[in-house]
Length: 81
Image (cartoon, rainbow, N blue to C red):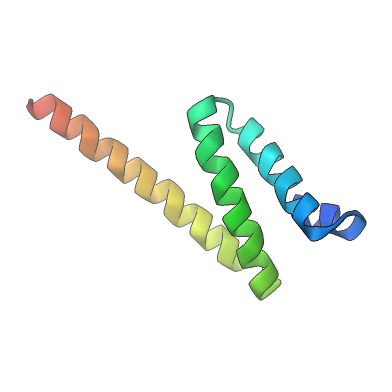
């Protein structure tokens, strides 16, 4: 939604980078921020392709789910070692 508002008043590339920075900063730490920045750029591109928020939401959900599952896998492997 931030992207759509920024794109209405600035060039699309500027809007994409600005919303990616906002998205990254909101995640609160450097590592998550770096991943979030790249993900936000991808999500803005997906939004532009579909002009719908549903595909970016689904991708964001999938990304968060895979990160959670990967973290659980690492914890189990560490506990087994």
